[in-house]
Every structure is written in C-alpha cells, then in structure tokens.
Length: 286
Image 1 (tube, one colour):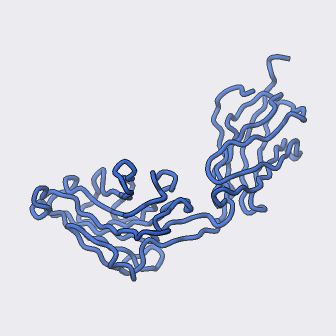
Image 2: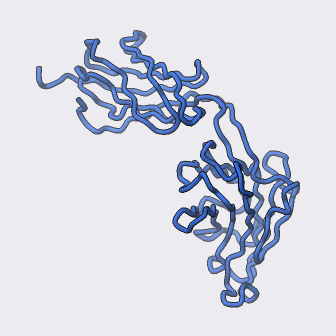
Image 3: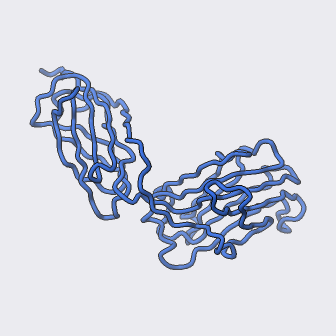
C-alpha cells in the first residue's frame, strides 16, 4: 500500500548510447527542398559536426509577400515520398542542431516554428522553436511519441511569421545533423518508484519505466534489485517493452525493515543501468 504520492527520481548511468540515424537532409537532396519568401542552400561556412548544413536565409519584407498577405510566412519545406520513409514510428526522436545569425541582437519570443504535415489538419504537428538564440548552436530533440499520426509524415517545414520581426531583419538559420534517431540497443530513459515512500509491508514496489531500443511488439528482460546498504534484499527479472510503462518488483516473500533502500535496474546485458531511492516506513496497522 502506498503511503504518500511523493514523486521519486532516478539516476541513469552516464555514457553515450549506441544510436542509429536516418538523415533528413543531405547536400545531394537540396533540390527536394522548396522555399517561399526566402532562399535555401548548402553551406559549409558554419557547421556543428563538420558536415555541410541546410542554410535557410530570410530577409523580412513587409511589402513583397503573397498579395493578400504581404506580411507573411517565409518558409522552407520538403515533401516525403510515399513509402516507408513516411513512417516514423520505429524511430525514437527527431534531432537537429540549429544556429541562428541575425541582424538583430535578440530573437523575438517566437523566432520560428517546425511543422510536420500529415494527411489531415487534425493530425498535423506544429512546434514553436522558442529555444533558438542568436549566435548559439541549440539542440532540438522531439520525441516521436509527441507527433500525431507519426506513421504518415508527408512534409517537413520550417517557418517564421514576419509579424514577429521588423521590416528588413536578416536571418540565417543553419540546420545540422537533421535526422531521425533511435537507440540501437535496449536503453533505460526513466526508472523510479511511483512513490518515494511506501509501507514496509507492501507486497510490491510499482516502478515507472521508460525503455527505448526495444523493437515494437517485442520485450526485453529487466533485472531489478532492491538493496539496503551493501546487501541485496529482493530481486526479480521483469518484462520491459518499448515506451513508458509501469512494472512492479515483488516484495511479498520478504520481511523488510523500515529504512532507506536503493533500487537498481539493468537491461541489455548491462549496457544500460539506472538506480533510484525508496524509503520504507512502518505500517500503522500492526
């Protein structure tokens, strides 16, 4: 039985995980990108990882936009051809590094946006890129689980609203390492007890778990242990699947004393580990 809904946190072991990437921009594919009220090019003037970047240039112009909307929406986009490239569900996140150079010292509150177009308006995805800064490389990581209809992404678009800028402002966006990314092996992204405090006679410890690198529809073994100081007091092999889930470490065969304990989780034969703390307290019903 849970005592209090106290939130718990975890420590995920450091170390670069093995990742797989599918590039969404290469210099050879520049012709696949189209623009409105702006220009696009391949650039090596400023790169994050040494590879050529997608260089999107905008001159804000209040007079020469679309006839009905002269203060418009400069944009750059590419269509995704029919077939497996439209299905992003097997990937974990969309990734990019973005650098902004500008005639402005500071960007407006909403400097740009990212749009992912799917077959209908209800399933389209829009994200404002409020984290962008002038003169800085900023990392973007968008979990695929946040994208409605991620199985049918038909167009990628970056855009700005000229109304957020001054007439004549100059903007240069450099986009590097623009790719879909997934973990190549089972990886723990989140691990913690649902409550940081439980009664010592609890039959189990419910655990919040998020796994990546597990194929859709498959499962992997999660070795879970409970330690007090240097002694292991409970252990079980649990079943973990891709994504967020709740699993439970059984305690019904153990008589545990009140105190501070450490939870440990290992997946992928030891390639990914995590720890979390939990406190057991005396039950008032003895």
